[in-house]
Image (cartoon, rainbow, N blue to C red):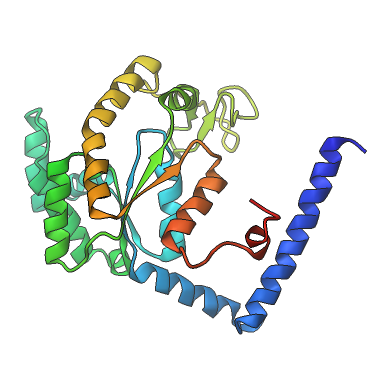
Length: 279
């Protein structure tokens, strides 16, 4: 028997054992199969009630991968500030008109407008009733201070500031190989996740593109700006006691487990992990 076959059989055995352990744990906790759906709903609602967090990380660290998963599990809103700004401008809201005027003049939208947009979402977006994840804001200490002031006034202070840490060299390798299907947003990677046919979307057969800013020179400039601005922000949140780091160089499933360990520290992982039979 080859080593690869042996590894596959061991993994299958572990999966079966973990499923059995999970079933036993559910029964011990009074969660039988008949009420598994309501149990999941209750768990999500309980977690979402306190979901008030920001995700910090450079472009390509995985915020866009992990934030939607947190949103789905805990039924909270995901406020990616770039998307939020574009939506406000498209809807021609008062804040959107103010922002568009500033951007048309080639200037940066003020911190006050951005914080007001976030406040508007918290007050009017039904998804935000279950909590929120901020992605892409704050990027500077003054922004963090203004955000804290607003959230404190709203009685919704942050609980977590999670930083996805990853070496710049790995980010360059990840992003410079990224390919995108423009119509759907589906992404591929030349090395790590190549399409079935070169430069062709698997589902539609349409051409893939490489974004103009997904190149080494542009990325290194963006990373330099990120480190310069965000270093003080992470230090700010360290002092408040809500900062935690996650190794984003790991594969997405492992990063997700790390995030769950921060959000639900009492969960403690599976029984196999507790007894050292699974990482």
